[in-house]
Amino acid sequence: MADKAESLIHDLDKVAKARQEFAGYLQDIAGTLTETEQIGETASGKLGLESTIEDLELVSRNLSEDVVILMKPFPSTPLQAFVLY
Image 1: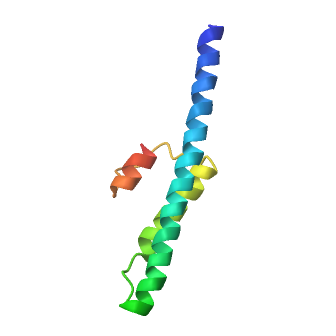
Image 2: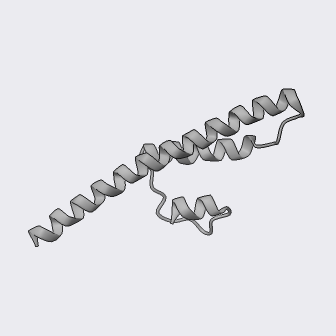
């Protein structure tokens, strides 16, 4: 029984580290999209990615803060499906 508990703790630690790493990737993507919006605004107009950027930042923050949503009716985007389920 102790081995199973240690294994579970080890696995949960790996999950926590992966969540932090993935949160960083999402924040990097949001940053890149923000820069793209700023460049595009002066060059040819915005791409309209504000909502997507906000979603990425929210998901990244939730992952970083270990916010877990246990129940959600149905994901509306593939990103939500990946993160919430």
